[in-house]
Structures are given as C-alpha cells and as structure tokens.
Amino acid sequence: MKLYKNLFVLIIGVFLLSGCEGYLSKDPIGLLTPDQVDMQPTTTTVQYAVSSSYQLLSSTLNIIGEWGWNDGTVTRGDFILQDIASDDVQKKWNPDGDQAWMDEFNNFSFIASNGGFNGQWAYNYEGISRVNTAIDYLTDEEMMAKLNFNKTEQNRLLGEVYFLRAFYYFDLVTNFGGVPLLLKPLTSFNEAYEVAVRATADGVWAQIDKDLNDARSLLPDAKYSHQQEKWRVPKGAVIALQAKVALFNERWQDVITFVEELENSGYYNLNDNYFDSFDVNKQFQEQEVIFCYDHESAQTPRKGNGLCALLGWGFVAPEASFIAAFEDNDPRLLYTVDVESRNINKILGTLDGEFKGDDDAPSSRVYIRYADVLLWKAEALLKTGKLQAAIGIINRVRQRARNSMAA
Image 1: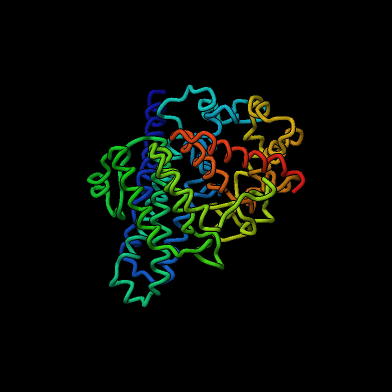
Image 2 (image 1 turned 90 degrees about the vertical axis):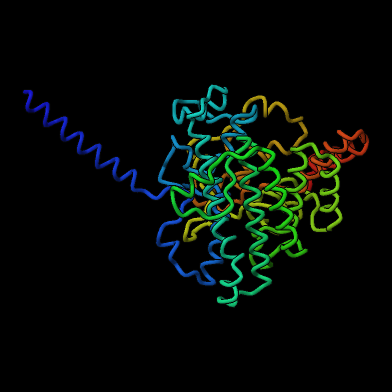
C-alpha cells in the first residue's frame, strides 16, 4: 500500500510539474517575442500595429486568453468596475452564484485579488504595449524612409496612437492612481523589471497631457481623420479627452475652453433623437458621437460586440433605483433598457433585441458623446460661479431627451 501511495504522489508531482512548465513558458503580456523583435517591418506591419492598438477598447470576447472569467479577461470590464460598482447596474436580472466576483463590486466587498482589477489592468497594458510598438515604428525616420512611408499618413497614425496611449493611461490613473509609465516596447524580463516602477499619479497625468498635445498637433482638422475608415481617432476626440482630463483635475477654465473649441468646430451637435447615438443603423451618420469603438461582425480577427452575448446569458441588469430615477415622460428609459424584454438597448444598438445573445454583434461601444462634453462644461461653469449658463446647458440636454420620441 505504501508503494502505491508513493507512486501516486510521484505521478501527481510529474503532472503538476509539466503543467507549471507549460504555464511558465507562455509569453507574458506586453513583451515582444523574439520573432517580433527580429522581424523587418513592412508598411502593412506598421499599419496593422496601429489598428491592432484599438482592439483593447472593444467588447470582443477572449482577446486576452480563453474564457478567463476569474481573471476578468473575457471582455473589457469597464461595465464591472464602473457600472456594476455604481448604483445603476447589477450583475444579472436574476442574481445567482455565477461569477460571484462581480457581485463583490456591486456590494463593495472586493479585495485586491478580485479578477476585475486584473482584467482592467491587463487590457490597458496590452493596449499600451501595442501602442508603444506602433510609436516605435512611426518615430523611426530611417525605417519610414526605407519603407517610403507617406508622411501625411505617418503623422495621422502617430496622432492616433498617442491618443490611444493617453486613453489607456487615463483609465489606469482614474482606477489605480499612480501606475508604471511604460513608453517603449519591452523585449525582456530584465528590461520590464527596470522600467516597471510605479509613477506618481501626477506623473501619469503629465504624460497623458503630453500625449494628447502631440496627438492634437498631428491629426487633421476634420470631423473624421480618415474619410473611409471613420472609426479612427479624430482631432475632436483628442480635444474631448483633454476636456475630460481637465475635468478630473478640476481645471475648470480649461474644461470650458476645450468644450468651446468643440462647439465652435461645427462638427458636432445633439441628435434630435437620443437613441441615434447608439443605433447600429446610424453609425457615423449622426452628429453626436465623438469617439467610439466600431464593432463589426464576420471579421478576421473577430471585431464583434461580445457583450451582447453576455446579455443573452442574463448579465447586465439595471438596479431598481436606476429605473426609478427617470421621470415618467423621459423616453431615455426605453431607449436605454427594455425592462419587460430584459434588453439593454444601448448595448444592443437596437430596440427589438435583435443582437441579444450574439457574440459577434455589430453595435458600437460609444465612449464620448457631444452631450457628455456639454455636461462637463456645465459642471465647470457651475464650479466657476456661472449658474445660469450651466442651467441653460442642462436644460438643453433635458429638452432634447423629452423631444426624442417625436424625432
């Protein structure tokens, strides 16, 4: 019997050792592989380095790993750290034990090991890693000359990735405070250890400001930076994020100045109908969306909105207090959530539940709308003693909401 026990322990030990070896041999997120380091970039390589940097803004499933629920990496987890952690959203329509770590955000019982934090960290730093690779290519003038890369395109792409790096760091600093500032591609563990030192929150904010200023100087003065690929970062998104950065740092006059630049650009306005910003059939045909991630179905690699699949599994439900906060005549409630059908219409991009349960849906992830920046300006006006001007903006947004049913 003792012999059998020893053999069993030996077999288990070998199994665990082989499993650990496989786990430890995986390439860490954020490091370039040796093949990537030695690769001679082409024009297509550079262009793809930029476009792939957007992917971590998406709600596409399993960009990092495969079904890493407990690691918080099945999809980008903004809705967990922001919406479920607020008084607006709960995990499911019928609360159960599924993915209990999400409930910890709802009731504020989470600890540091909760996978939601890991997911948000991993998505942002993977995005930063891709951005840094693209910046490394685009700022290598010798490489650009060798590729005969178009200078106008070079500047535009560089402006896009500077914005994206600022966006990812904005999400990190507002969730975690000071974080490591990684500004170049990392090629080894030793290099990663050397630079992965926590910067102060002020240092992160300063880098965000620098990246946004650089992006702004490089992007064309137009509503869309690329007329065929309208999903790319436009200058208006840069100015809007500058306004949001100023808002979070209580630089009230800067908020007003940035928002007035957007107002005076003539590119944006409130849609007559509130839902047009989210309607899958009106993407890039309306006036209000300043920046979004453009999900697309049937693409390789996949670009669909996987959050719609989670809706089909009962995830993402409004709190009763959220529903009660709407006035009886406010059509935004129906446009936001269909309680009877248990549909979150703003995520689905439709009012009929068409994409519910679809892990490859085409509905956009809207990050910044013109209504948002107007309300930021209203807050800044209020903070600087301009009460009546602030009330005027708020009433403008509320009036649009009330008239949406007829629009």
